[in-house]
Amino acid sequence: MTNLNALLRSLVIALLPASTAWSQSAQVPAPPQDGSITIINARIHPVSDEHPARIESGWIQFDEGRIVGIGEGSPEPASDESQIIDAGGLTVVPGFISGPSQIGLLEVKQVDATDDRREGASRSPEVAPWLAVNPDSDLIPVARAAGILHTFAVPIGGTIPGRTSVLRMDGWTTEDLAVVRDAGVMVSWPTMTPITASWMRRSRDDQAKSIQNRIREIDQWFDDAEAWKRAKDVDATIRTDLRFAAVEPVLRGERPVFIRADSRGQIESAIAWAKARGYRPVVVGGSNAADCIDVLQTTETPVILTRIHRLPSSRHHSVDRPLALPAILEEAGIPFAIGFEDEPAHERGLAHNAATAVAHGLSQDAALRSITRGPAEILGVGDRIGSLTPGRSATFFICDGDPLEMNAIPLRAWIDGREIDLGSRQRRMLEKYREKYRRTGQVDADMP
Image (cartoon, rainbow, N blue to C red):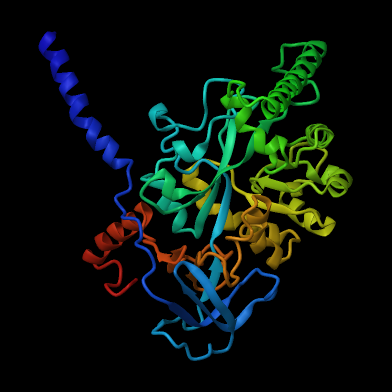
């Protein structure tokens, strides 16, 4: 028995490096941009105020990671030795921004050691995703290969699961990935109505009391945070509380409070709570936002939608209600973004969600904006990413055709002017089995 145990231990130790290596990307982060680059003969989607419409044939120049010029036709002759890339009619698009996202925080859902999405406490606002993200996650290249070049990283679990971060999808370390380390605090708002499903064993009164207790706890916690801040402003020697310090930007109005809310009761009560305290709310989820149009308009509250491909939340809603929701928000003039909160391996379907919204009434320009400039502005980084504007980050990709089509695969991509590797494990597997059938003669040898 002793020898058997020793053998089992040796096998586990031998397999650990292999399993760790399998979950790590071997791709090397891109080097800094070396010299000016000009892309010509391109169909360009600037998604900007300067160029609100698509440029059918134009150029874009970038240097030192920043866009220096964009326009129709051909560029003026440059005084420097700019590298020329002839796009040949291909499409240039701002990098997609996916969120709420757990890319880099979760690798394999069934393996607890690869899951860094949550802490054990119910209220842990000091938690910051940028510190926990894995720069070598094998899912980062998968996202990049679908045009996702930034994410809005969000922790989960508990009433105040933590802060949020804006991350770029390329870099050696967590510091390299972090664009904005603290983009605001996340609050999970309680369900406002008792559940009457057959599986619920608690009475309506018990549920109602629990709901009121949770709201009082949230109120009390923020009361304590504001009291600590006032005392700290008067007496700098007061001991620092990391939990309260983490929400200071929200208390000062410098950062929004992201409130996870879906039902009408959740959305309306959460917005009322935030506005009464002088905070800047952003609704995350918002599956019933169409029932709260007046409140959203009056308070100018943005919405980050999650999962367009879902069933309606109520039997009283039409089956296409989630798919038509973006069009309803667009018509009402409410700022919104389309997210794809699912397992990180599936976030590559972000553009497909936006395209489905187009099929249900959303304009094509608004759909592209909802996964580029829209989320950038909601997250407070619209002056850096999300559109192709001189002075902003050279973060975009080149694809063939409509960027929202499922077959519009990015061919080349840049993040801050650095051309990144668009390879991924899916593409490696595709090439592996294409080669298998090439050797048997079942596939043309010249097939790409």
